[in-house]
Length: 502
Image (cartoon, rainbow, N blue to C red; front, top):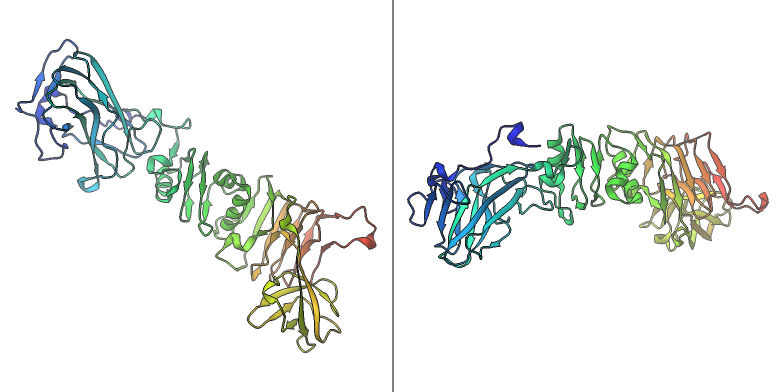
């Protein structure tokens, strides 16, 4: 990329031979003082080292030299300002490439570095090369990082240190060296060129949005670094993540051209976080209804709360598919079932309720109920802490009165119990690798047509698929295989259950 060639842009300011009225002794903005006819400045047409140069005597604490010419800047464009200088006589000053950054409305852009590396001149007659690079991105090698808001600059030199030195300065050259900062894929738009910092703290949301807008069909590049995005963002273009991003739980990342789990893993650098963020997007954007795991395996150290991953929904009634992957339980104490023993009252007049439930705040939706008069596979569908009552998946029998019950909450790879209702959830080609540590899937309390196709439910510790309510209405198992963790035991000694339906 070279805008001098592609767009015909002239970056270099006028030569000193064209007149010192083109050069300011201040910032270079219109109306300021110039060096024409000043006693401390003169054009030298011939010099043994330079074909033509400015001879400048340092008389100020900071002797500025700025071109009145506005050198244009744009995101993704990197300019090198260079010249040669030599000390002729007098005190030994220091010198650096410097510039005045201009923003929209011709206002001064503050808060950025306006001077490059400082060089000391300590030998008379020695030619010293000066160079500095200016650009929008915080890249290695960029001396003047001015961000995306700088649209032009007045460039030149700063002479600092003791006054009285006489310095000769060759014509200042400004050239486009953006090619040195362009990724190997020339079509990539780097988020750093639009102000992204990547330090894990600064909010790079606006820079990411600006880069995506500028891409216009090209790829957006997120380079090495940890980029913080504090709000939801939707990418219209493909994104290549070399570095990673972090986001608040409530913020959504939508990848329109790369909606698959491997892309989210590249984005977040963590498989579990990536799966949650991808599922969050799946339920919040209508342009895609399938999340392809790309054959990847997600290893869990504890249950995955699917409603907490989505955060903004408790009811969802549209078809959504998760396909082509593995979800595995690693050995961890987090899979240990919770168990609460509590006294409660049952009445046949309200056969799916328990009232006056002691210790109710510790009883979770999806808990298996056991006790006097309780049949097989009775679960807690709803919990009302305020009224101290529970809604059950099925009526009890012969248990009228107050009794002591045991509530056991198994731990599942995927836990949908935080939803009120989910319909149309499909799992296609998913291996639920419970490894004898976890149960597989806990359905929500309500819903329709949960569909499992070509799935393996392998070695669930307690339950394969559990319905604590009516979400099993229309539930389908198509070419699925349930493999017991208790295969060595006799059938009558096994306690795990493949699935239940109400």
